[in-house]
Length: 563
Image (cartoon, rainbow, N blue to C red; front, side, top):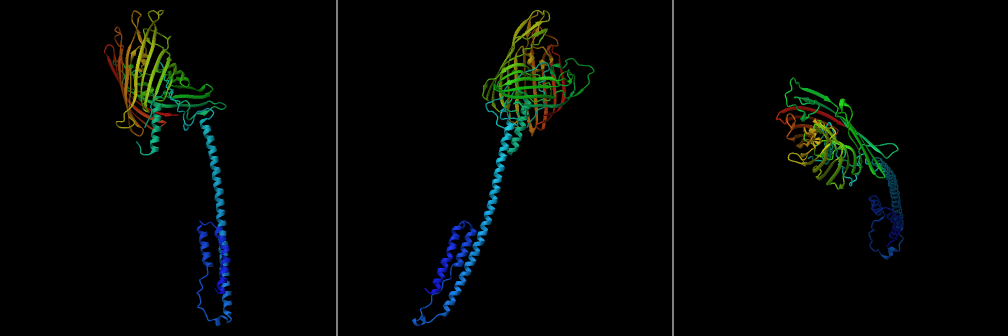
């Protein structure tokens, strides 16, 4: 090896020291670093020096001044290459510092986002705590989890003198998207809830929209609706704001003119309160409307509830609101059981599929030719099977003592025992639409006339005194069948047939109530779950014991806004 070649090898070895350090310093996966190292090695690698042919020994002993010159040039070339390599290393170091600064900035930004997420989670937890009132266990927005062990409390119960049965314009609703299906289900649930109109069938630990009373664990919620109704009577019917089939006159009324009535007395207002206590969650509910005399406020419901125990006034345990058809008419079906009255009720738990209710209720017997005496409470027991969400069957038994004093001998007290059986159901009937339903109710018994809607409205059909002061209870058969069809969206119709028939004692004659028939068809639309409009056409016929008959028809339109 000649001298320049050895020198170059030594210098290259020296130059490789910083390059080797650079290789270990840089990230091997960094493409920029890889390029820098490659270019540096390419610069530092000397071109191969071609081997020279051996010269004669004499020539080697001669002085070679040109070799020193070549040696200096090579050193200068290598020095220049080293400078370029060092400059390239400086550039790479600056690039790495820049990337390090960017990473530091991104780390700071990421930490900021993490802090923000933690603050949002904390705020959300606080909000959930407020919405569910953790110390009360009551969900006030309807978005929290409900207690799956708390089944709806069916403690229906019943009224009284003015039996407006169906009273409500209620509402509503396959769709491709999940959001559309969810919205439809929400509308269906809203319609279902308003149609059954039963404040006792609720989840006790859920009260969406409630507010907390300051300084207490009690939550409360105001509710109700404003309803305006137009009633057009084409024939004499004995009532100008509703369709009471039993009030249809059987004798032609001379000088009758068609009448139109507009009213808002069906509007309601209610207050629902819940409070957790050491004995469990307590509830109080009060509701009234303005259907009293002169549009005065009238009490509909007033009861307290603790779990499966209820005390107060509400729908009778003999009432099945879940199978009630949707109607505009405030009076409602002639053949349905429709009573609200004071009671004590117990509903033992059997899970969500099976339900049972036992109640002792205000008897308030109503008889003709005498005055009723309340002494022994009416006894009601019912069982219900929920086969699917919108499919249930219910069987109920009513036992009662009808106690009364005859007008002919007020000092005498007579008692008879009455009873009634009921079978009711609501069945999915998806012949044209998945939401279509069939609802029916059949009632039969003796001495239970006060519980039948039409008989309650015209009054005193539990029993009748004969001329000897003996009390005869009246056999009653009543019921209805209704079909609900959904057209499109929330547009739906209901076609309903109701029937009541009395098997009167042999001494009864003349214009005494014998039977009534009622047919109605309607159309409802709910553009939103809180607003309903409905129109309904009604026809009815009444027949008396002597065979006389009378018919009447009526048109009703209603608009309702819930709050």
